[in-house]
Image (cartoon, rainbow, N blue to C red; front, side, top):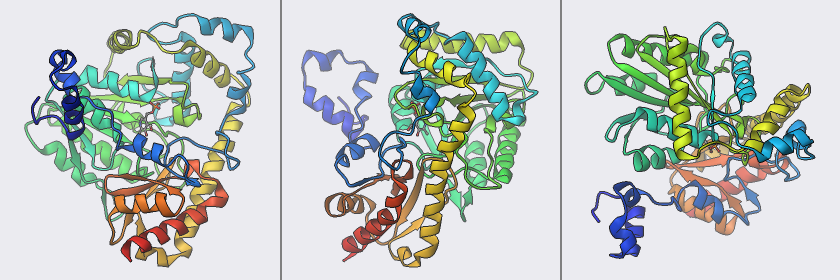
Length: 435
Ligand SMILES: Cc1ncc(COP(=O)(O)O)c(C=O)c1O
C-alpha cells in the first residue's frame, strides 16, 4: 500500500490489512473507494430533512416523482412490452430505439439536421456512457480538461478507474463562462491528443452557456484542432433541454462541433435519465461525429462502443428500452414533457424572484450564475460551507450538498411552496454559524 491512493482508498486498504484480498487487489482495485463523503453520502445524511434539496431527481409539489404519463402508463404493461422485457437486447441497444433517438437528436438540435453522425449506442445511462468514452479515449496518465465546477463522479470514473488526470480550468469570470481559461488549458503542454469534457446544463451550477459563449467555445476547440492537435470533446448532455432563459444556447454543442474539423471528434453522451425523468431506468446513449467521417468510420466507432458495453455489462435493460420507445412514439409525449419542463421552470423563476427581493441574503450567500437544469449554487459569505451544510441539517431541517466549496441546491426536488423557506433557512443557518 502506498500513499498514492486517496485518503478514502487508503482507509479501505488499511482495513483490509495484509489479508489475501488486499494482496491480490489490482492497482485499480487498490485505487477505488466508495465516495461516502460526496453527493451520495451527503444525500443519505439529509434523508429525514424537512426540506431536502440534495439529490438530482425531480419531485412534484406533492412529493411524488415527476413522471411522464405515457411512461407511467406503460407500467400497466401490454404483452409486447412484457415479452420483450424478458429477452436480451443487442449490446448496441434496441435497433428501433437507437433510430428513434437519432431522429429525436436531429429534431431537438436544428444544427444537426444536415450533419452525419453515428447511430447512438445504448449504454446503462450516462455514467456508463462516460465510462465507455473513458475506456475508448483515455490511456492511463492521459489528461481530461474539465471546468473546475464539475460533477464529483468524474473523479471516480476518469481518475480512479481509468487512471487519467483531471486538469481543471476556471469556470466563471465576471458572471460568464471563462472561455479564455479553456483556451489557456488547451494551449498548455505540447500539441497532441487533447480530451475536453463539457457539461451543459451543468451539475452543480445549473449554468448553460449563452449563444455567444457556445460559439466562442467551439471556435477555441476548432482552433486547437486546426493547429494540429487531435481534440476529443466529450459532451455530457445529461440535463439537455432544461434551459429557462432567452439567449442561452438551447441545443447541444454537439451540433456545432460534429462537422467542425477533421481533427475534432465530438462525442455526445445523453439519455432519458434527467430529460425524461426516469432515473432508475438506466438508459443512456453515446453518439460520435467528426468532419469528413464516412459511414464505415462511424460504424466502426459504434462497434467500438458496443464492444465496451459487451465487455462491461453485456447489454442494457430491455424493459426500460421498450417502455421508452413506446413513450417516444406516443402522441402526447411532447406535451407531457413540456408540462414537466414548466414545473421546473416556475421553481427556477421563483428562486430568481426570491433572490432579487431579499438583498439581505447577500450577507450570507451569493448566487453563482445559473439559468437551467435541476440545480443552482451559492457561495457562502464568511463561513465554511461544510459547517453551514451541517448546521442546515442539524438545526434547520434543510438538506443541501457541499461541492467544490459551494452549496448546491437541487430545486428539482423541492416543492414550489417550500422554496422561499429554503432560502430563509439557509440564511439563518449561515448567520448562526457566523455568530
Ligand atoms: C452531469 C451528470 N452527468 C451524468 C450523470 C449520470 O446520470 P445517469 O443517472 O444517467 O447515469 C449525472 C447524474 O447526476 C450528472 O449530474
